[in-house]
Length: 74
Image 1 (cartoon, rainbow, N blue to C red):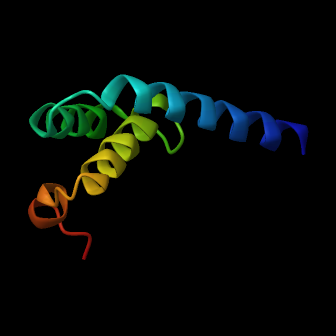
Image 2 (cartoon, helix red, strand yellow):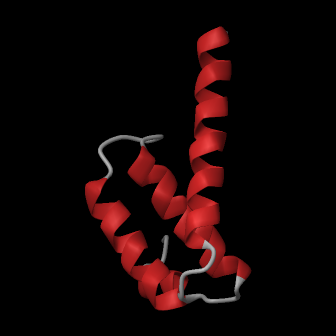
């Protein structure tokens, strides 16, 4: 139980840290970072996995659907 709580807080901390760092980046930079994190993540929940989720979220918040159009989730 404590381990799950720790992992959840660790995930939130990394997500927030990356979100603050990536927010000022352009859409093109976010798309490149998304591709980088996609190719480097090893398991669900690692820093790269969180990184590509941050990129997806920021792009969608800006109304940019390039990832949805280029890489559909079918």
